[in-house]
Amino acid sequence: MPTLYPLLLKPEFHHRVWGTRDLRPIYDLQPDEAIGEAWLTGDGCRVANGELAGRTLGELCRDFGSDLVGEAAPQKDRFPLLIKFLFPREKLSVQVHPDDEMARNLGQPCGKNECWYVLAAEPGAQVGVGLKPGITKSQFAEAIQSGTAERLLNWIDVHAGELIYVEAGTVHAIGPGSILVETQQNSDTTFRLYDYGRPRELHLEQGLAALKHQTRSGKQQPMKGDALDCLVLSPHFVVTAFTLKSEEMTFSGSGSNCKVIVPTRGNALVTTANGPGFEVRAGEALVAPAVGGEFTLSAPDSEFSALVSFLPGREVKFPAAAGSLAMSL
Image 1 (cartoon, one colour):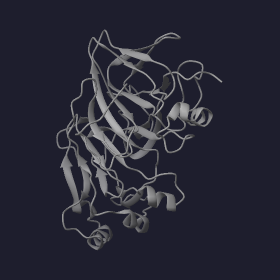
Image 2 (cartoon, one colour; image 1 turned 90 degrees about the vertical axis):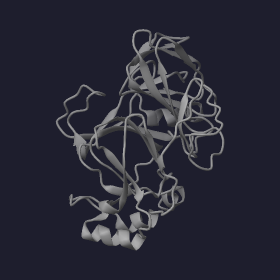
Image 3 (spheres, one colour; image 1 turned 135 degrees about the vertical axis):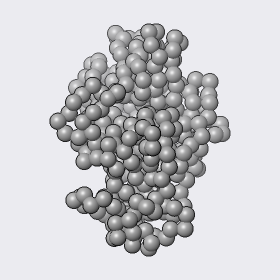
Image 4 (tube, one colour; image 1 turned 45 degrees about the horizontal axis):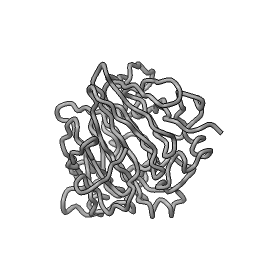
């Protein structure tokens, strides 16, 4: 079996009614249909470099197990994080995701806690996170039937560089005018509660059952670090950020978890001890296996920024971007 190495993944594009045909500045594409999501670590995303080129991420998880995903992954044959670019040009549905317990009762592998990093935002761009104070589940159900559900959401302005944590059970929606990087548990289970009259299926019974009045969702306060800035520390993922100008950054496998590097600006050279170097750029994902040797990122000719997402190496009780976190590379 081949030895693991840093895996460059190509995105999968998904049509959404609320998407766009203009994916700039991330992708220089003119799709025939509206694209709402670019999946970076989906099971069907294919490797673009090295001996494993052409293989899907799902296949490699089944073949390599914990050597790829790490000992912290709850399932050794399944990638733990699904990371996407979102391109909303219209409002997304008002929706909610199940937590782990509810998802498993429904036969799903996990729930869906997620977060959104705001890569770009037009003036006035907003997201809806949770219900307004004092709104009961019955009041919200009545608002769904009367077509006024979105008025009961807590809408907040978003700006580039912010991160919003969305705990499972939180009613939420995304308005138009932003580009988001979504990091989530590897689940696509969504209960659609209200959809502005679009002819799509709603999931009212399951959605209202999943809804929680008290969650820890909202904007996060970043914590500055020596190499990485911690944007959110949660039980299901950690999201960090860094920028390279003329320096280098070295990554090495820990055995505990894999890491996903998502460039958000510029491109960087990836250098390993074995094999030729290659470039990674905005719109792609670089997966650093839990066991796979060292590699170095450098950007000698331009500024390079990226997010790094991984599973926490210890138990985390609540989302926070403050406190102690050993973010070894």
